[in-house]
Length: 199
Figure (cartoon, rainbow, N blue to C red):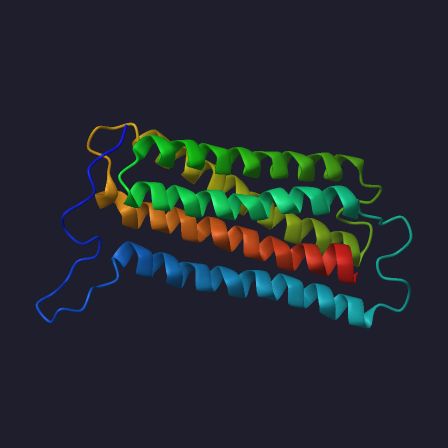
C-alpha cells in the first residue's frame, strides 16, 4: 500500500530556517560513538595480547572457519543495503516495501547469527583455554548480542509499520534503527579483519 508523499519537511525547521536534527537521532549517534569506543577497546586488547604473545598467536588448535565466515559477512554487508533501501521506501510513502525490506534485513542478520552460533559450537577451544580464546569469544559474543538487538529492533519496527498511522513521520525512528544496523555491520568488518584475516 503506497501512502502519499509528505507535504511537510521530514525535519523540523525552526524560525531561522535551518533544519534541526531530531533528538532521537542525535542521542543514537552519541550512544553509538560510545559503542565504537567499547569495541575499539576490545580490539585494542586483542592486538595488545597478540603483540605480547611469546608463542604462536593464535595458538595451535585455535583455527577459525574463515571461508564460511567470509560468506556470511557478505550477507551482513548486503543487509546494510537492504535497510538503506527500506528507508528510501519509507520516504516514498511505501509502507509495504519498507516492511518487506526490513524483514529481509532481519533475515540476513539471523542467517549471520546462526552461522556464528554453528561456528562457536564447532570450535576446538574455549573462553578459558588461552588469551586468543578469551579475546575471540568476548569480542564476537558482544557483537552477537548487538546483532540480536538489531534483529529485535528491525522486527519491532516492521510490526509498527502495519499500523495505519505509520508513515514518513516515523522516519527519525527508522533512521535510528538503520544507523544502529550500519554500526553493527561496520564493527563486524573490523572484527572479521582482526580475528580471521590479520591473526
